[in-house]
Length: 281
Image (spheres, rainbow, N blue to C red):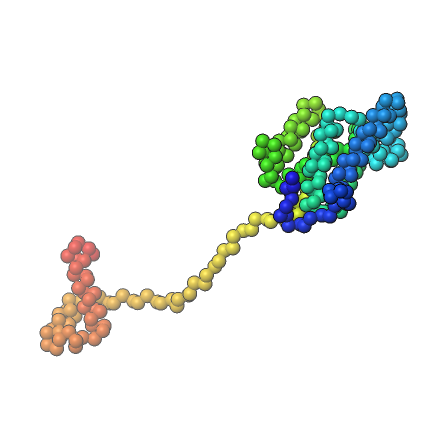
């Protein structure tokens, strides 16, 4: 069964063909680990613990100049149930990752995962000494698979993305409960790199951009300036004699015979009379 069909990257060619079956790089890596496990078991049976110890990784030994341990630690694989599960996961999930990314990118991912762990612990060995053996590629490759195919149902119809989150969380809790900071760092480095590698290959790399909040622009509209109009001077108030004269003129010739000034004085006199009638001054 393959989860890859219909992917947009195109199918990667297998390494070779044997009796009609495709042999991928993931199959060859798994076979190499099995051979290393058998050799390790025979060496343990023969009592060659010193040889195995010289091949295992030790940050203190690497800092003393034994740099071959950065490459040889994966040759020491004692037999265990965990090793068998790692081989199965490498064959199953590694094949799908290789088919999706291509052989070259898959081998680049595996090589980076293989070297990243000892290099990081060598750098940290200045403060904390670390020793380990055995290549652990299966779990980071499963994280890469879940990143490529997050919606694929696995055991009990659990989606791959939730299975990866659950397994990473459980591994982190186990490391924290045992105060194994080396296991926690290995989990963060391996799984984090696998996730970022797939995201970069799939979507491309782009430096994050910091967007600072901008102040809202204040749009100022020009307000038309009106010419200042000088207030008209109040009409002079007319006396009673002048009002009587204006009324006589209106009686003789009509109101249209009054000029503008005479009408203003008459209106002012009328306003005075109304104010006086209301009690005003």
